[in-house]
Image (tube, rainbow, N blue to C red; front, side):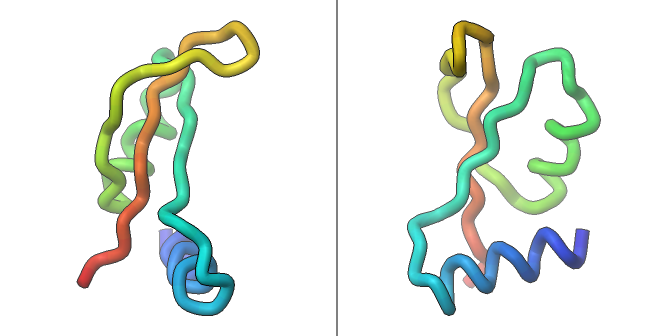
Length: 62
């Protein structure tokens, strides 16, 4: 978890990237839980390479 948080900070502060996104298969409950623990906001579902995906937008805490 700590490594993922550091990547988020690095991407936002050093690389000046927009918020990171996670695309998770609906059956992958473990990855959904990680995204939520990282504070990711759920977005509307989408499709990726013909497969359903849940979308999460990662926002750094203020």
